[in-house]
Image 1 (cartoon, rainbow, N blue to C red):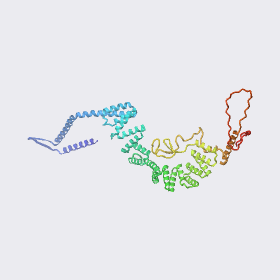
Image 2 (cartoon, helix red, strand yellow):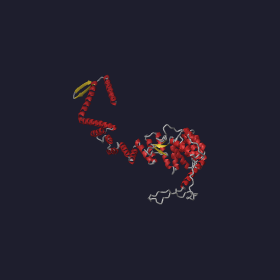
Image 3 (cartoon, one colour):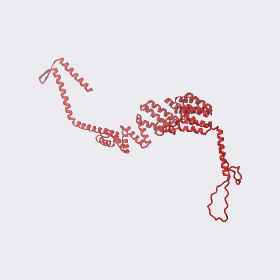
Image 4 (cartoon, one colour):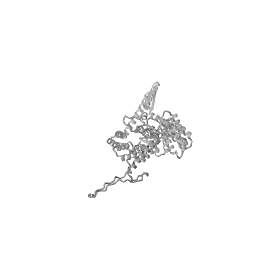
Length: 529
């Protein structure tokens, strides 16, 4: 485009010059060796320009002839390079498609047409062909050669990292990922892998610094970076909780600013404040977390905030949580548990039944079984509620990659993924072993609930009476003597018989029976009431 503009400008300048000379006619005289040469000015200008054009064309022709051997060599070299790149492109496509034979063939052809030091992609093609054919040692050698080349270092480190992960060499994979992350923090795979490895090892400070570098390099979005930073701060606060409550409080509080509804951070911040005797501030944090999303651990920590409170005071605190989030299953369960501890069985049963009616799940029916055990002691009714709990859907838990944990963890123990745990019902355990066609309903459970057999004292007395009657029957059976043997005639043949084992009647355990030789008492029929 620039050349075209320059050519157009040159033509315009020449045309303007000739036009200017044509408007101003004149003669040009030249005396050379006594001879006078005279011509028009326009003719002289045209001749001069033509002479310059002839000189330029001649120079181009001489230069072309002079450099023709080099030009021919360069032409064939370029043609050979083009063929090599064509073979390399075909080989990479074949490797991507899984055609190892064609990939190997094209790699050999590319190496014959292009030097490997000039085109490092040949090493990549040979490494990919070796991986497809299962020659992993050769592939690792190629990746190591690429890692030593500054131009292909990142590609070689990624290949070595993937090979180390395939072999299960976690330490080698960690070293390759950290090396790549140190030299190129903008690589997402290296930064993510290094972040997970440092988190698994508990190196929270190093993980936070690496996350900041990722955020500065714009490898990760700001929202995701803030969440991961909050998770790392919460994990560091959990480690500091026993030794440095103030540091744990600061980390957990900052994590709550980054993730306002993060329940683990709220719990750790509250526990740290409890250790500093700042109960009111800790309660405020727990209340905010409860408003955001009710969680059973938050409710338990709030109710048990003051160790010296009575069960009635704890019930009032549970009712305050219910007022913050009414018509919520977790609120009802917290109040029901507090009422059970306070021996207010009526309120506990009403709240537990309301929770089961809202969400018929395992925790509600187990709580009803505890209430029944503490109130009536009727084992039939307790077993009834336990059977309902077995059939009900399971309660939510901290789940990550199929692993269920009783507490929150920053890293998945299965895959090592950061921020993997979620509060949800375990997959595959959404419901218990329910029979086909049956459903769990609190109304149906209440209708089929067995009646109360009596109070706890009456049930205990009946059980004791049954045990005593069974014991008396055992003693009477043991007190019966062996039947008398029939005498043999004098002239009877002596027959050697094997001695028969006789039952042994030892002294009874009952001290009221003294004479075992007395006649046996008539057998008495025992009726168990």
